Image (tube, rainbow, N blue to C red; front, side):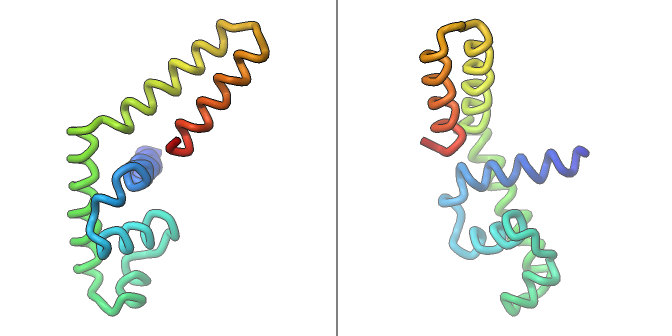
Length: 111
């Protein structure tokens, strides 16, 4: 289960910070995290070694983690969504609840 959570977390960081990676790193990370290709499949498709794929994923992951440590976008997004969920539970006005749901969607979609 922890591997899955780590996979989902890195995928979310890729969504938030992916544009800050090199185009080569973006493509390999997308192949691995979005298209669920194996290192071998990525290497074969890109005519590089499995070691090169592993190295690119390791370096890109380190960059993503460093970006999150510095900028805290994932942490902030998570906190906002939890706060909105708590607020939704306290409000009985359906119109306001719909507005909160709309805000949640915008935050999840990256506004």
